[in-house]
Length: 232
Image (tube, rainbow, N blue to C red; front, side, top):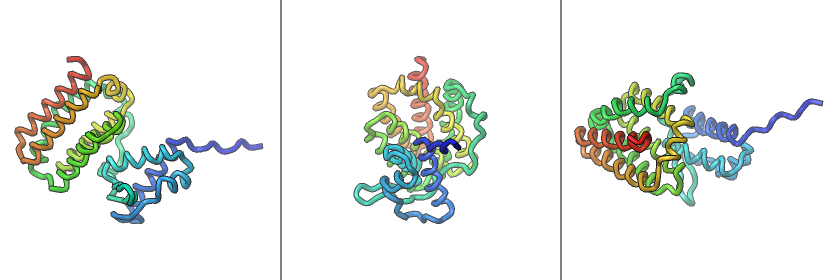
């Protein structure tokens, strides 16, 4: 007698939910503004727990792919602003947190000039949403989602596809388990508040189209993060 087919894990189901939403938005089956099925309906359709659905929707909201409104529902905002093809796994797997921070200190301050020159009001609105959501986060995981979303919003605001592609690689490294363990250890409530202040300073300078002040704020933020990570 043949063994029964293995059931999908919650992670498999969450991946299929994500693929359904992203592909439906990309190919036009669900236009921007279209309402998505409820969490209960998605859980039943993809045979996953409600909490797995909720986490997947939270991640897509942080990426700007969907919007959620209490009492109204969840709606398509557009596909996530990411490069079309993922990086090969081995292109980021062996990058250490120390290497990443060294690279970020050289790459990210240079974003200031591009953002000041190219960003639109919609870009700044997206940055503000990320900041507000991060500050209202109840958990470290939620804060980290919106922190990552802010970095993505900054990359997108350069309107430079090559830069966005490079920063996708930075985001991929930050999702590695080694990086996550470091953040879990060092992101205290006090440090989180300081990071939030630094994020506001960066975005405030960018909104003012002050590239020099924005660059200095980015450098100060990254140096602070590096000290916290490695006790420099």
